[in-house]
Length: 160
Image 1 (tube, helix red, strand yellow):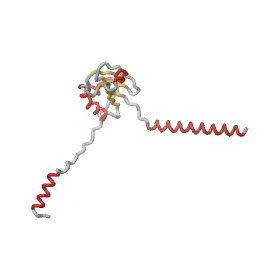
Image 2 (cartoon, rainbow, N blue to C red; image 1 turned 45 degrees about the horizontal axis):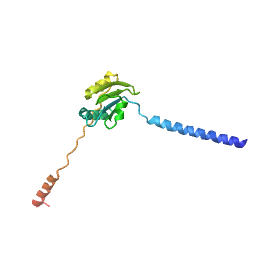
Image 3 (tube, rainbow, N blue to C red; image 1 turned 90 degrees about the horizontal axis):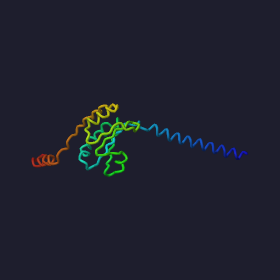
Image 4 (tube, one colour; image 1 turned 30 degrees about the vertical axis):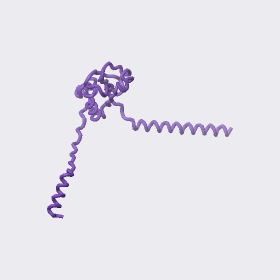
């Protein structure tokens, strides 16, 4: 009988330790988890002219508004299954999603930055202007030829 109780106690302790490990692992994930953000998905192609025109706009949105919404580009010529998954008819197509993943709006064709930001407002998501980036002044490196000219003047003038 004692042997059975020892086995039972060992199993209970093992189960508790496993449960604690799972709890600790999950609590670490939730502590590091970022809140879900609204999402802009742009479906296009790297060689499509309006898509090429949108690339700098998408890059700027991704950089300046990363804390407010995600910006994702999917090349449907390289990933045709994605085009079917999103049921697009032409490229570029922009799809706006809320933080829970619900589609809010869809636009086909080129879309200017101002129009993208306006669309967020139309669907009820307030977008704040990004914080201005600090101006970083870079000093230009001295030209090697000017240094060479200075050294040659010094040598030829006899001031060693």
